[in-house]
Image 1 (cartoon, rainbow, N blue to C red):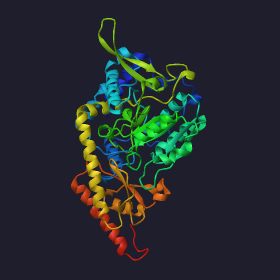
Image 2 (image 1 turned 180 degrees about the horizontal axis):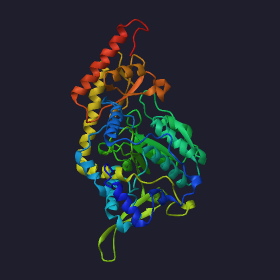
Image 3 (image 1 turned 60 degrees about the vertical axis):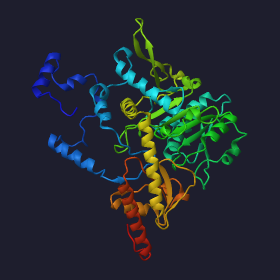
Length: 463
């Protein structure tokens, strides 16, 4: 709450009414040995004016940048109505809808969200969301292993998948006897070639993970990869950017029979970048796998009087069923973010979301053309891309990015942190928020920085 109206007299009156001498008396059931005592590391309280100034100073540390960063978190325009509505108390303070009769509004929002996500991904069932895209993939891997009829505990994961997704999934499954087997990408195209999968054709695996687009922004041959997985008795697990699905084929339509599970990060659907979160993960799947899905599913029904209502149809969490039967213990939905995504998608509609995708794709193409016109800058991968692309620079990537940042530009993501062979490469992204002037400013500054490096004596240039 930004304002607490209770005066000292109000607090004293309330304590008197309940027969307590102080607020401390309300916690007298906690043994003294368990109390932490004073908070020595916490400074004395500040005035409202001082706190406001401090928070403005903290917020200013983020800076105001012209950003061409992507790599899993994307700057999209969010209509003002989205958070104006979501900030209402009915949404903002609502918690998990344990009591359906008292949570009809929250349940309806989740139901609408699930409907939109199944239509966007082309699959049958959606849960009420997960913590983020990376934990969503972890849950999808666990689902696939549980569903594997041959009992395999191996999952094929392309090296072109987001490095953080791979790291989080490994952290979740490594102590459960599940092996993530890396599949190399083609250095010419940046995508997973079928030839890279041939060594696994005779080995039982639970699933093949298929990113679309992949971490490099490149578009995988999802039809061929999905069919390959099914031919070899594996599930196909899609990891998709939801905005791209307004333009690209839905995972449920990949190959002859479609992907089996689809997960991804919902941040592009109405969640601001906000210094790294909070975000939410989405998950949809085929009907046959619905009972393996973690979390909860909201359904629409009618009561005894024939009036429509919303209920928790499936709850596979250990809070609701025996732990041995639970599919997960980390699947609380990010309800506030889901509400924002639902309103965001409702406001944009199918055509609006497609327009965002088209504009993002067009801006990235224009940016790549401008940057590749600079001597020494070149496109690395030949595969078509969505709204990110990999560029090779004629100078150390980290140095160039620091020089761009000094000019107020976040120029991209240095890939050498995760892919040593791409140490001189950056991943750049442009969404619908970028104007022609923004693209030109980036190109001019990059050309100036690289030309200074070419003209400077060895070791004389500093970013």
